[in-house]
Amino acid sequence: MTIPVILSGGAGTRLWPVSRLSHPKPFIQLPDGKCLLRKTFERASGLNNISEIITITNKDYYLKCKAEYGNTGNLQQSFILEPISRNTAPAIILAALKAYFNNGPDTILLVLPADHLIANQQAFAEACETACAFAKTGKIVTFGIKPTTPETGFGYIECGLPSLFPQTYQVKQFVEKPSADIAETYVRSGQFFWNSGMFCFKAQTLLDELKKHAPELLQQMQHCWHETMNKNTNPMLITVDKPSFMQVQAISIDYALMEKSQEAGVVTCDFDWQDIGSWKAYKNLYAQNDEGNTILGDAIMIDSKNNFIYSQERIIASVGVNNLFIIDTPDALLVSHCDRSQEVSCVVQELKNNSHDVYMNHRTMFRPWGSYTILEEGEGFKIKRIMIKPHSSLSLQSHQCRSEHWVVVQGTADIVNGDKQYQLHINESTFVPVNTLHRISNTTSEELIIIEVQSGGYLGEDDIIRYEDTYGRVSEAVV
Image 1 (cartoon, rainbow, N blue to C red):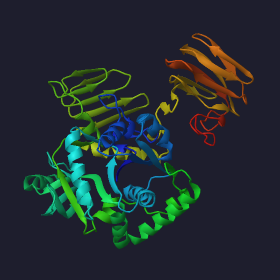
Image 2 (cartoon, one colour):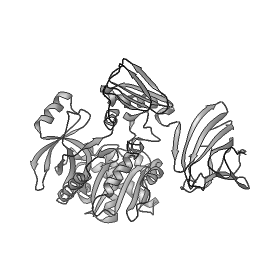
Image 3 (cartoon, one colour):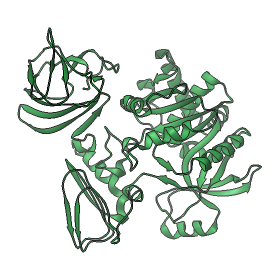
Image 4 (tube, rainbow, N blue to C red):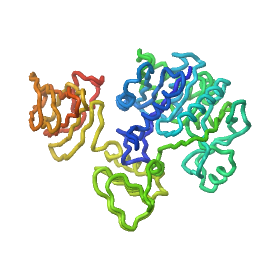
């Protein structure tokens, strides 16, 4: 049995301001309208003899993941929900423990980060088959990507002795992100491959190797798993125990195990692979004009070359600038030299240090029922544009500190307002007083758009008491 494991826990800080903590890069839409997470899921589900896919993500992203996957028929979707991020090693160990106890020690896991793009499904599937065969011999198999450029943003794998299977080798060494000169020698040598962060192994093999090389981490995770199982009864939806998980060391699987293990192998891959981890990588997804400019949105470029322009609302005009990333969102603007795209994460860290909200939230917030956009806010008031998807509904709720006034501008709304139930059509409105039970539903097949005006002494999103909710959020204070 082979079970793909999708790791979807990264914040994508180098893709700020489009990627934010509340809506990170796996959910960013790509040129074909799909997000990275959806494409990873489709790639995994397209492999032979796959009956289950495990997704490991933060508990706050569970409903987003479910919405992206949709109905997958007989293919089982199981989730491991982390309360906080602890890097890749704890996440992968969680998947191994689940597989070990639920499916058996010989279960093969195929670990796939959710921020990769791979164009050739057939070549990917062939590499996975080879990796699975190699893993059955007791190896922890990595996927090495043939480098096309001397990339300094990736780690590298040096191949050792060849193995029994085509394009497979013992791993001689893992090398951290090198300087440009060293990366150049790696590419010329033909013995170094980009470390993709994809893995394949038997559950038993991983646990045995951890016992040898990271026994304390394994002990921490076994305790966490025991505590988690005491609180979970559904093997398809596992919420990780927070107190014990917080005590686990935050460490990557490379540092914790792969650089120490003698059982590391690599399958070398020569297909179109991209790690969409920076604006430089994102830019490469789109065509450029004769001046080398890539423009997403509305822009005027005068005597400007080799720029990437991303604008969601405003027109961007440039005069005499070259080699820049200009990323404009409704509440934040990034201007960066193209050669320094890896340093965008430093901006996010600075915003976080200063407790600035734009590292976490967009003005538009996505919810399982749709989205809302903050249009304006001031002392004692907030104005939102609320979009409710067809056949979707907000929770039945009340607020202790605010009243709300709703105006329908598109579609038809089914309203619960206290003990009254009625419909609102375009240009009709209603008022919901403080502490009044209320709900908005869209029972039609078109989007419903409402302008909401909030008034009160406190307008935080945690001023919600839920009584009923389609999405299981009754105990949560999130709209």
